[in-house]
Image (spheres, helix red, strand yellow):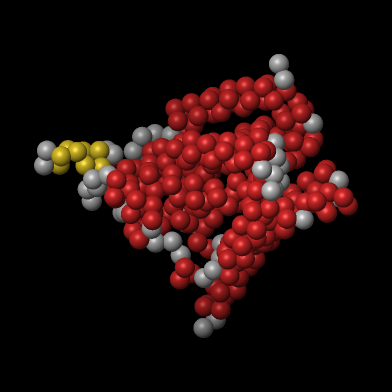
Length: 318
C-alpha cells in the first residue's frame, strides 16, 4: 500500500469521525450557535487540521507537510474574506439565525463536492498542459491587483448576483423560509423556499471563490493530496468560523489587501517558476511562501485592529 493511499485512508477516517462528532455532539438542529460553541468548534477543526499536518510530517516527510500547512493557511485566510459575503447573503434573504447552522452545513458540503470536482479537473489539465499554470499565474496577479484596489461600493449584492438569477430561472421560488423547510407546496404547486436559495448561493459563491483559491494552492503545491486536504479542512472549518467572526469580520478593513498581496506573490511565483527553481530550492520556496502568507495575513488583521482603535479614539475626542 502506497503512502498516498495510507494518507487518503487516514484522512477519510478522521474526516468521517470529525463530521459525526461535529454534527452529533456539537451541533443541534434549528438552534442558535453561541459564541462559546463557535469558538469550541473552530478550535476543534483547527486542531484536527494541525494533527493532519503532524501526520503528514511523520508519514511523508517535511516537504508535503509544509506545503499542506501553507495551502491550509492560504485557504483559511481566503475563507475569512468569504464570510463577509456569506453574511450579506443571509441578511439579504432575512434568514432566521436558528437556521444558520443547518443552511451553512448543507451549503458547505455541496461546496466541497464542487471543489473536489474542480480540483480533479484542474490537476488533470495542469498535468497534461503545464502551460496552464502561466494562465493561473496571470489570473492570480490580475485578481490580486483588482482585490487590492476594490472599494466598498463594489461589494457583493446578493439579489442582483448571477448566482441568484440562475437559481431563480431554474427553480420556482417562494419568498418564505417554509418554517425551516427547503421545499413546500403552495397552491398545489411545489415551490422552493429562501433557505433553498441561500444553500444554492452559498455553494455557487464558494465555487466562484475557488477560482482564486485553488490556483493559489496549486502555486504552493502540485501534490493532489495537499490540494484536496487543505481545501476540505479549510472549508469544513468555515461554518464555525462564520459564527465566531460574523460580528467582527467587517472590522478587518485591510484583510482584503493582505490577501491580495499574497495572491499577487503566488501569481508572480508561478509566472517566474522556471527562473526561481534555478536559484532557490523547493524546500526554501515552501518556507518563503509560508512566511509571506503568515506575515501578510497577520499584519493586515493587526493593522485593521490598530486603525479601528485610532478611529474609536478620534470619535471619543470629538
